[in-house]
Length: 230
Image (cartoon, rainbow, N blue to C red):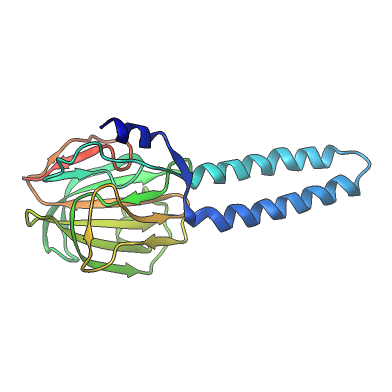
């Protein structure tokens, strides 16, 4: 347990952001040099450095990727938050796309300032991965879960329950990365994917799941327990 706590303190930059950060830094440095040499006054340079340096730091913060472990091997029937953010939906819905039955829907909205790595919410086997093109409505809107670009991942747990985890693109998010592969085993603590910039992750859980979160509650990916399935 002590070893796991130490790992939680480590933070790295997600590989999805490496090129973005390097190339943008090179461009900003080049523009900065031009501004420094082109004007007798260095005020334009200082203004540029302050504004775009802050923007670059925000992007750097966005691509941070904490190394997290759930903290216990007791994961039977446990559903863990797949993402950092806040709970925007907890309700019973009719899931008509795959299960054709009522499910408990729990949605997590990720702001620009949240970690955007996504973790597997349960242990099990990946039964299906399906990407769907669509619109780019604001991620917190209800219609985003139906009309936006998304990737659906269905996982069957060792106990036989099926969980749908949906990565939803938002108004700014234009790229969903999904690492889950059909037929592969998956585990809590592993990355399921990444969504660039503001977005959302939906969970569709079996009825009877004991929900442990409430509306507007902050979640920490791979740490917060969303619910316990029966």
